[in-house]
Image 1 (cartoon, rainbow, N blue to C red):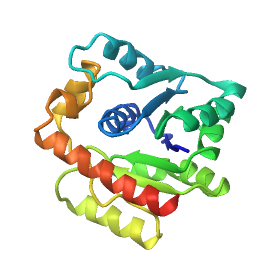
Image 2: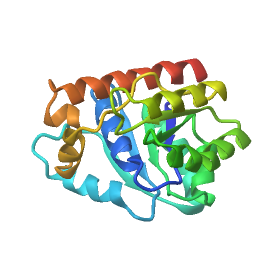
Image 3: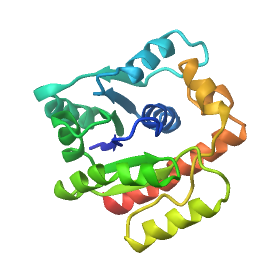
Image 4: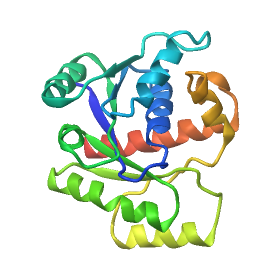
Length: 212
C-alpha cells in the first residue's frame, strides 16, 4: 500500500501548494505518485492544467481534485495504485482537512522560519495529535543561518516536535518552475535548488519510513 502525505498549514503564504507540487515531481522520478487538491482555491489543480501542456513535464503523475464525503474512499483507492499520495489541504481546519489528516501516514507542515508561522501551525499539530498521526515541520524560504531561525529550532526541539533537518531556501527557481507547470527537478535538474529539494524529500522519506 502507498503512503499518504497531507501537506497542511493554517497560515497562508507558507508555500503549501508549491511544496506539494515540488515534492510530487521529485518523488515521481522513482515512484508512482498522485497529487490530490482539496483546497477550494484550486491552485494545485491550475498547476496541473499547466503541467498537461508543459514540454519538460515527465508523464504519469496524476493531479486530481476531490472533496467532501468521497475523500476518504478516494484516498484508499489511490493508496492501492500509487506509492505516494500528496494532499494539498485547505488553509483552515475544516472537515476535509480533518479527513485528509486522519488518513495520512505523515502530516507535513510547512512554515517560514518566523514565530507567526509556528503559532499558526498549532491547530494543525493539535489535529494531527488528536488523530494520532505523525507530523513534521518543514522550514520553507529559510535563510542559511539566522538568529531567529536558531531560536525557533531550539523551541521546536524543546517541544519535541519533528523538524526536517534540511530546509528549502528562498530561491526563485521554485516559483519559476511552478509557474511553468513543472517541478524544479525538471526545470533545472542539476541546479542547487533541485539538489536541495531532493535532500529535503529524502529527509521526509526517512522520517516516513520510521513512522510507517
